[in-house]
Length: 194
Image (cartoon, rainbow, N blue to C red; front, top):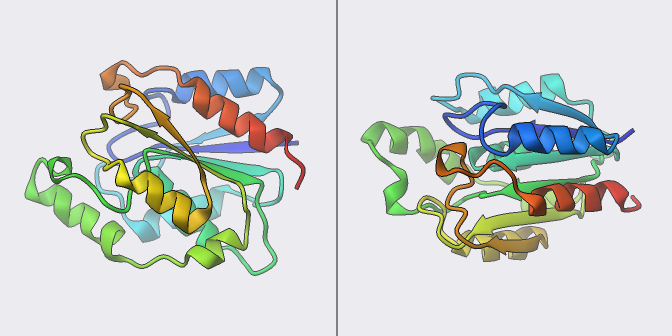
């Protein structure tokens, strides 16, 4: 049975944006879906969020992870933490970032929260040892995530990259409630052979 874990972003929840639609569409196709509610979404911390995934996920080759924004970093840092022999099916990464726009920080507190996520190194080779199936989805007008992140994900993960037009940061408050490319990417990983 294919299992999909949906991980929302900073200041969000599992009922925001594309998450309800994505969950429904995946369940219609017979996948088991877990839309995780991340702890303290206004103040995301690496240790807390990665630990939460460790408590919720039993990783195997039928496991597919989907993260949005800071949820992408959470997914990647979780994969990095897996044991040597643990494998997952793949990951779809929506509006992921390791470099952000200057407009991303509305207040100094935002930068203080983001700084550990920006500055804590990540081991790309270790992540790739657990799966070789990554898809990165970005928008050409995202006010927070620099489009250069697409190349960064392609170079470091070998991710298939999809650039959407006019989807901003893929948030519900921007009117983005469905995203066929995300659904198709998850289904493609689910249908692929390990």
